[in-house]
Image (cartoon, rainbow, N blue to C red):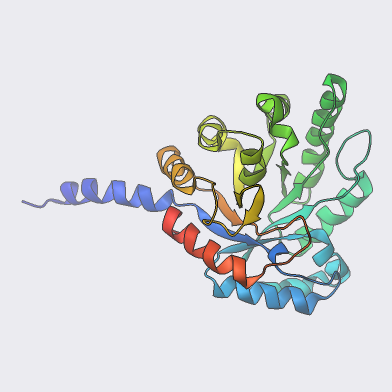
Length: 277
C-alpha cells in the first residue's frame, strides 16, 4: 500500500539529488569583445543564453565603461535571463606588495560590478615567491574580502598553474590562512600542474564557488571534452560530494585566438553529458 510517508520517503532522495545539481556558466572570453563595446557583450550574452547556460562571467574591461550607466546597463543584461555570476580582474602585472590588483582598481570594479548585478568579484594574482610574500598576499585577500563584502559581493580567487605547483603548497596555504576565502577553481590550470582535481574538490568543496573547465591535448588547449582532462572522474566527484557550485566553460587560448562558437558548441554538449546541466 502506497502511503504518504512512503511517497515522501521515496521522493526525498530525488529532491535532494535535484537540489545538489551544479549550475552551468560560461566565460565570455571565448569570443572577441572590444573593451567598451557594450553591444558586443550583449550579443555574446545572447549566444550564452542560447546555449542553455544559466550564468556568465566576464572580464572587468567588458563592463567598466558601463559603471556610470549601471542602472540602464543592468536592465539590458538582465533581459537575457542570465545570472552575472562574476566579474574577473586579470592583469599582466600585479601590485608587488599584495600580488593582486591595485586597491583602487579593486574598489572601482567592486562598486561598479555590484551595481551591474554581479554576484562575485573574481581576482587572479601573481604567485608568491616565498613565505613572507605569501603571508602578505593572504592578509591582502582577507582585507579585500571584507571590502568587497560591503558592496554585497563574494570575493573569489582564481588560480593559475603556479599556485598548484609543489603539491599545491600555495593554494593550500591560502585556504588555511584566509578562512573565508572562496575559489573559482581553474581546474584546467590545476590539471596542468599535476593536481588531482577530484581529490581537491573532496577536501575543499565548501570553499569552491565555481570551477573553470578547460581541456588539453599534447599541451595545447582544445574544446572541452576533446582532450585529456577526465571530465567523468570530476563529474563523479561532484555527485559524491553533492557539490552545487558553478561549472564554468572557459575556452580561453593563450595565443589570443578566440574560438567562439566552434569551441563552445562541443563544450556545452560535454558539460551536459558529464554533469547533467
